[in-house]
Image (cartoon, rainbow, N blue to C red):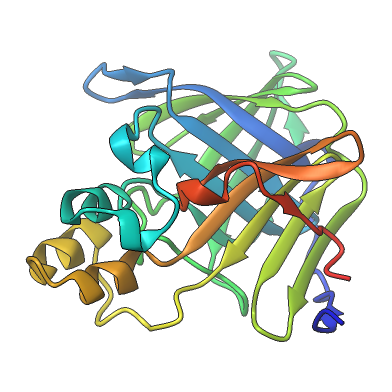
Length: 245
């Protein structure tokens, strides 16, 4: 029998316009550089959220079946990405005189929050603009970036967040889900993951402890939820139980 799962009570709800699973089309940084190839999905429930952010090119590590097969350089490569889970707070959506709907969102740590990187690269609110019901522009107040997001069809209902007794979490938005499992061993200190990786040198056990953290994005196919992208590449293709039965 699988471990019993509980469904945490949501906090203050974000506007319905923000709920669902959003996939990033592109991001443009202040220096003019642009990324249209990384896989980035943001799954937003009534208050809880989880995102998966993976570089498009993952090299030879994509072919490995577990940590034991990875070289030291491949273990270091697994540290790329920016996945996280948190609580979203968002102002009411207001339509301006130009007809554009706008709101401001912030992301804060909650009881079940997990960060693949302990520190966010962009720890500031997001200024949101809806250019269509399912198309969203997000801007950093500092001007550090602009992103365009598209909501995936079939991802607004049901919205659920489940946690089992071992701490594994499932965030579900309709036909999309994110599986989150924190590291078995806590990080030595709060810092960017690349800094912690550099401090490990060639210590294989320490490197594995740093990257042994799962954020997996799954979509429903023929009734099953199948992992399409993961911080642990060997999880891709696996079927997951989104109800933790």
